[in-house]
Length: 151
Image (cartoon, rainbow, N blue to C red; front, side):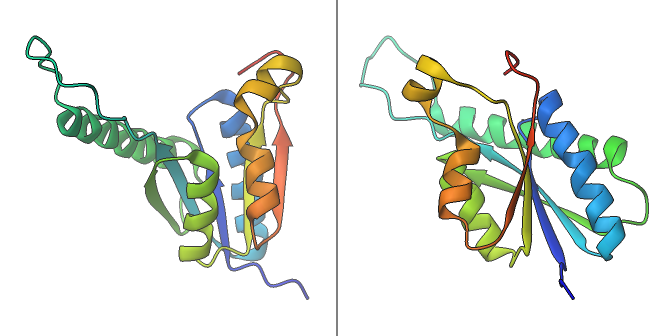
């Protein structure tokens, strides 16, 4: 029998990612698995030195991390059934690579994530996080397609 003990569900707090979370929570309930909800915070590249510019990157990144932490907690509280064992993880950097790394660190047996179905020039220029995860992941990936035209 298929043994699924840990399900990783990345979220960017969009409606398509919350749709994927519904699938993840249903599967976690069905298999009696733990749920790991994750968000990846982008790394802000250093800015050129300018004496007139007072923006502090570490402070800004701490703010992004705190915001992600709060949104993850809120998502768990509002969207995950009580009694389901869930933990949250915040990654930093390239979303696709970080999701794969977190899945390995958490020993995920399945990744459940949204795809927005982007095509054409936008897909060519920006690529697809879901596509990268499917290519690089060592565990199965279930993608939940969001409506076309929504990002």
